[in-house]
Image 1 (cartoon, rainbow, N blue to C red):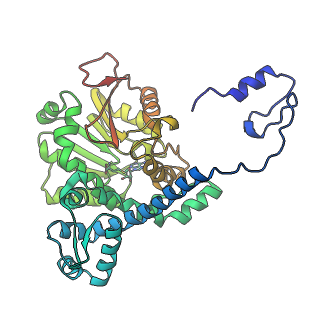
Image 2: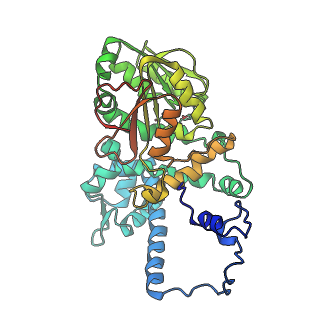
Image 3: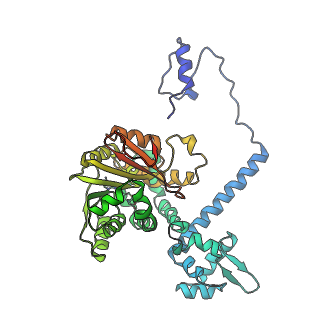
Length: 404
Ligand SMILES: C[S@@+](CC[C@H](N)C(=O)[O-])C[C@H]1O[C@@H](n2cnc3c(N)ncnc32)[C@H](O)[C@@H]1O
């Protein structure tokens, strides 16, 4: 928050009027100035009003289209259509093993929404390859349809979130039974494509250290896919994944067993109470969700060996709201915050940092936790994440990015 508050400077100058600083400036009376006349609401300018109405209707349409895309993803319809030429609803439904009437109605929404091309002459529907490249599972980390699943997850808890608007507090993890599934699917696509080849190399020398054998911990590991990928790629190193979600840890252990990994183990544990010592600690998309982020960062610093490194992937945003205007995922970040990230933290009486806690706050908190050397790195094309490479000493070693 900016410290520049003109109302306070005014109050210092006009000493005779005692003001309650807890009262918003807009509600304060100032006896040295004439009381403003009460005015009715300003009359809207018709042209911008019409533009804005149009924009809001587009928002409504796009929100509905997003829901339909989520269903199309979950039902496998985009994947089926990506492999088909122009086809009838009956053929598409048959290939997908779905009910034709529902598929036809879904195709109607996809057609009027500009996602699917429709030819009325033969009643056939086609998913253009350019759209398949953004909506099908084959698109990997570029698949935007998978992300649309968060829309339904947010809708599921709207009543509880609304109650928290009125009463404070938050919505607990237990209200999100599908979160681990959606989150794991979403991030696995990124880890499969980029973890070992792009994200690990953000830390100079880390690939070599992992090859020669180090101890690594991933906090808030969810379903542990990142840990299992690293354990498979670097058999000489030892990996631990920790999360408070029993379901997440069970899924992580099952994957490790399926892959026959002897160097990955998983624990149900609170990030704020870390034990053991490590050369590498990672936290991917975790810290801003936590009830006790400051205590967790201090615990990370405490569990890190002197020459260890903390790799923290978190949301690429500014701590200044005005700097997030125009962020390509701006409304999505704040919606996810209200409906998940902030509310799960507040449900535990926590810090409620919010999804867009931003770089400035992250860097300050890392510094306060004892990280004297922090570098931020970005992966080209990734608009969602920024990576903080943090070390405890500030002596400065090889830096590959922006020193903060
Ligand atoms: C947004 S998810 C990220 C999961 C995983 N790192 C990924 O990238 O898919 C945040 C994770 O933090 C876990 N978490 C939240 N609070 C925690 C705590 N106090 N201790 C351990 N894990 C916690 C949640 O259960 C969830 O799995």
